[in-house]
Image (cartoon, rainbow, N blue to C red; front, side):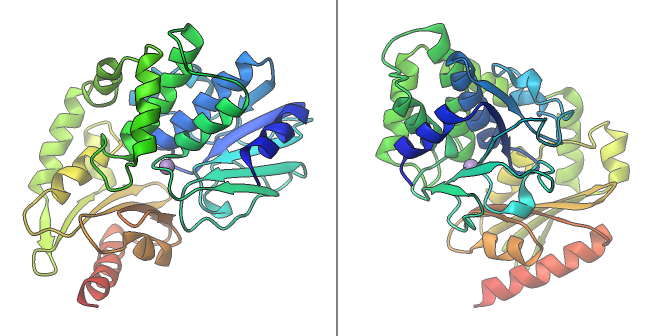
Length: 325
Ligand SMILES: [Mn+2]
């Protein structure tokens, strides 16, 4: 499947729903909103399907207000659903059981199941937004001058690049990543403003919660694994039951000698986990054991019907096996 062929299917569709993976991160949201803004500009009837609400630090993006958690399934007459940044069907943040129309899967996870009727999976893309950028180029968005539309779309795509590469620090960054970033800057995208929106707007309670989390930090498996478990009680006491912990996990991955970082959050319906790896250890494999997915160096999962302590023990067990191989 080429992007030209995908662009043709999009053009021929009348009502298009866009969706992404559960617990949508900067790339899921950025690539989706980039495409939403682009297709809207072209006059297409397009909307977002998501059972979850956009995170506060991403809500500055154009049309971010439309990710309000109120449209969990395709609306009537939808003839195309495009799933972005999601490796498998089970992780889609939408209820698609009753949906019978066409599905396109656009992603960069190496483990992608090719669950769509049409699939475009490019594991060399640092972020799904790189693919969306190329797709928009196929629709003749040139990104060659300063314009309001390019700035809107560009800010979404730039946000994806920043969040999926750890601000261009991870090994997934390629020449293409920087070329795209360069073009977007050339269109008037303000990298400093985006950086501040993403990382410089922490609520006071969030910083206090980081203090609490660091207080409870443990080093396990010969001090190679850093672990933080946040109970619902603690999260509630800071008013942060839906907190994004990507900054916390990166902080504790940076400890000398640590190879893997694990953050667990207790929620109403189970335990949410995030994993990060500094070097060789494949944390996607570990997440997959618990029904999750992601990348070699960053993955996530959700376990239901298990206490946070039991979840912690089981996951540590699996990490230990992986480290000892
Ligand atoms: Mn991604």
